[in-house]
Image (cartoon, rainbow, N blue to C red):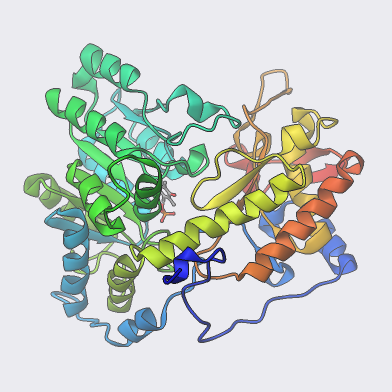
Length: 461
Ligand SMILES: *Cc1c(COP(=O)(O)O)cnc(C)c1O
């Protein structure tokens, strides 16, 4: 035993340089807050939350090198030095020469789809993230999810549950390739539980697309976490570095969209990158219209610096080992106490199966919402419902049509919480689970016609 990672304890590969106080509330304060927000956790002030696991997007801690980089930000309108540093970091990683900075991932999506999609087109993806789906549909095109069968089964332990179903892809490309302007694969598959996609699957998708002359794009938000899973699980990759594996993933694609709020280790930002210079030129014209000049694209020079540095840090082996392990650690702890979660644990979040934990609450009474509320009330821990509130529909007769799964997602911000925070979260969850049968269901008393989960008002039954 000579290397730190050969010891059983996997340490946070950083020490803390600056601290931020967290809110410690009592149960009475949390109950008052819950009543004020009508049991919708999106309505809470962040200062009412002790451990915030609502999302891993833009919530990570930047490193001292990223902060130092921000002081070097060049805020020139055109030709900023920070842009070239950013572009070189993206090109080194992706091999793609055309790099278009955007303020978030969804701006990259909107620009790409405005340029490439027409009404009636079809975009296959393993699973569209919600903004990706919305931006495809906004162009009048169809967002088609074709993840492998195992990707729909919370209990399946397939090592690459984010893989695309190749038979379905072949079928679509053979039957109607003229209606498919591009194919996308999301790494890791966020909406499918943060599950990875294998290199073999990416290679097969790439070959199939190129046989049919259809461009292949990655939704690359969590490319580094995906690369780590390939290193751990796919034969032939154990001795390759995460950077080399990432570069191989990108080498199979013609372009990518990216949210720097995930594996950019930044609080804001994104990009669109590709190989085709003429498509990129047209995208840049759209960028100028709504985002900004091509050398900043809706970002400050200092944001470009932070992202360029983040892209170097995120492929560090020590970071990725700690990152993926700390997510699995929470899942193992609560699984050990009998709390069911989506298996195997994905990269950025733990998904509790509320349907199994709260069998007395029917889907129309929102078991995952009920569980998320109870977790907050008990310990000030905020997760998010991913179930019938988010994805269910109201039928013509006013009845609820439930979603396929009832999950509470606990997303882990990058480099933000320590092991004792996570131990605390596990303790809260285990306490809640011990009185699962007392948790009430909820009914919706007020809701918006779309994306209701953000603003709906609930009451316990
Ligand atoms: C977050 C995310 C996006 C959108 O990025 P934003 O920066 O939030 O606009 C797209 N795809 C996936 C898979 C994501 O996780």
